[in-house]
Amino acid sequence: MPSSTKPWQRPELLLFLMAFAVPLSFAAWQALLNNFAIERAAFTGKEMGILQSLREVPGFLAFGVVFLLLIVREQSLAIISLLLLGLGTALTGFFPSVVGLYLTTVLMSIGFHYYETIQTSLTQQWIPKGQAAEIFGRLIAVGSLAAIIVFVLIWAGTNLFEIDYRWLYLGFGGMTMGIALTAWILFPQFPQQTAQHKHMVLRSRYWLYYALVFMSGARRQIFMVFAGFLMVEKFGYSVSNIALLFLVNASFNVLFARKIGRLIARFGERNALLLEYTGLIIVFLGYALVEIAWIGAGLYILDHLFFALSISLKTYFQKIAAPEDIASTAGVSFTINHIAAVCLPVIFGLIWLNSPSLVFVIGAVMAGGSFSLSLLIPRHPEQGRETCLSR
Image (tube, rainbow, N blue to C red; front, side):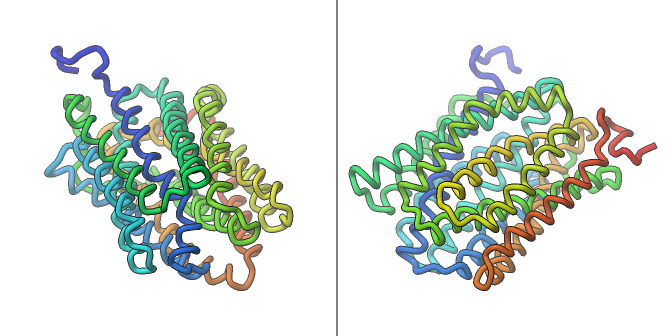
């Protein structure tokens, strides 16, 4: 770190500031989406599936980050991505139509996915391995704190002041853009300890990580697209109901995410992932059978809490990776993660029209596959011992 920097100008504080900025846009976009799409753009499950597939296309193209690094530093690209995230969110409420929502979603998604790719890479480069799990947990907690603020403001804005969707989207998107500009001005460019590859890297010894990341993308889509849609379509949740549900989720993350990071560091990635996928099998089967609104909400909260355990995938890769592979592999892994994300929402959206329960049964089967793959993670992974099959 340059000697001229102030004591607070540290890489981890920049990571925390940017992590706070993301949910101001994305959590607001997500909390308002189902009601905005149904009320203003007359969406059905079909249109929602298409929108969510389009939203994941930038994630599928995240491998392009490595080529952008030829012309811009990772830290600068992270801030530019935040600006795009905020802009896409700010514009959403001004285009209440199917096509308009598709276009603003893609713009928002470019910023979100490229930022998430770079945040993972920078954290793995800047934070020592022994502290990474806890720092990832703290990043989740910081983001959840921002999400709590968003959900409280949405609840107040819709229930007490009857603020229109347009101004809610504009306000939250504008806050993200303001924080991004602040980060650009206040923080210096931090040095990288290891020069990163500026080309795509695919290594056969990372195959288990790639497989787990692929399955994680499928699991995430079922939660983000169809669990929330179930709450609105089947149980008639209002915007304020959804905001309160998200508020509870975020509160649990603030309370437990850092502790979960510490537990992962103590008990290992293998055990954490086995616990996550066991829980997901139960949750997805619960979604398929639930007929009572409050039980559905409980499953939704439990489902969200399991997301913190996905820190294990990031720390697992940090332990097995060559330092110079981190930035390139972050982009490649996001692309692998989003192969399922691009395809499944449309396919599952069509299945949803005939049998919503079947979507979640398939999700339980996928969680079972992830459980089986997790058994191959060594208790102490490292370079040269990436899987239990490694010699």
